[in-house]
Length: 524
Image 1: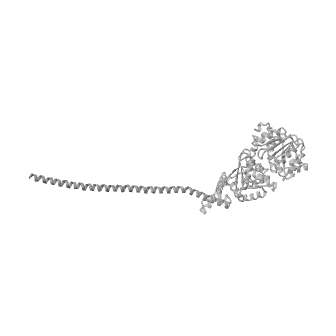
Image 2: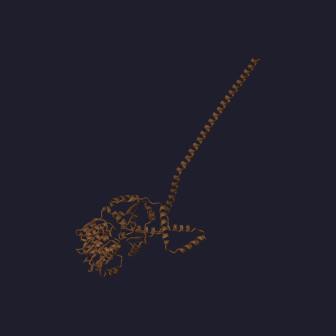
Image 3: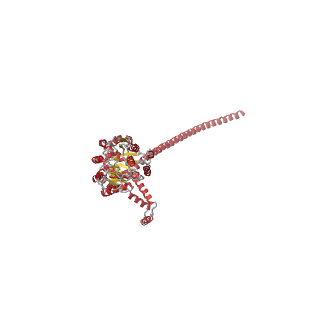
């Protein structure tokens, strides 16, 4: 269904069109009509399915610009999610006059927030702790609130915000509309809906849609001590432009980040121990495309809402299957294709089987690429980046330096370029080098094995030919001997015949002389 067919305010449609949104997602198509009718709603959908627009559009529709009171409140589990939700709603309401959105969260100077709240504020998006702080100070007044939204409610409960949520809900007007969105529905969520919602309608994404079809899910079986090497090899081989790497602990996030930085990767960490300034700096780098790898824990990553993350790595398998759904939902957004890669040990195979049953999807096992393949891909990538850098750049001064040094040292410039390429590949660990060497030997052995049968066939052919030639020569010699024997026999026969003919001739001559003699005798 298209937004233009839903009866949404034309000014909101203009903002949506500017954001590039035209088609509704399943959760939007189901939730928006219900909320527009004023009903409470329970929406079950994973991160990245368009929940912000699902509740943001009806909230903007309900805002009455002449009123100077806060009319919409959205509670989020993290600062990052609050900032991003506020940004999205501001874009959607860009052409709606009189709608002002403010993000309120911990870690930011409260005096600055006081100044933001002065004047006309229509919608507030914030974290439970800081919202309660402002309520105690009297700087937030919700007695005219029309709509309350609990976004990522399951995660807020996991972070220990249940009491804060209940306190805030009790302070809201009883005639408000309440919307709750969650990727999962644990018992605690149902208890909150029973207490603070009225005849809520359940809107649920089907089980088969729990993981996005555009996400290709794979896993690699590795030894525990080889995870770092395996991760680096996959990063080199797959060459993601922007990727998220999940670990289960803050300590592992920090250790892995330091290791990747030491190897030359563009990587930063994101977890709860960072100051707000550090978190903002890291998120801005990642959001603007100036950071390739962002390493995070599950809790910290709930606020990451970047559309073009092309790959998610599970360095550690999540402790809960629900977290897996949250993790991979960071890629494959807005109709784009994505990849989710998990590194597991043999003992963790059962987790993959459980995930396939839980998500009703297929997670394929892949064979780890060889070190040679990974290095080749990385080398080609570095060459391509260097060639891109050459375009529209005046490199003549540097070319002169290279040429001069090559002439002085009698070196080939191509050899110098190859040296720069090798340096750009960074540190190559011993295991990868050994495997690369082993792969070369294996390929050489394979070629030799393929060539050996040919040589054997050739040798066999020569032996057969030799035997054939010998047999031919023997047969020829036999024929010659038989011919010679026949010739001799014929000669002997001829000789014997000649002797017989000679005897016959002598005998005939003798008889003729005898007859002649007798004739002379008679004549006398």
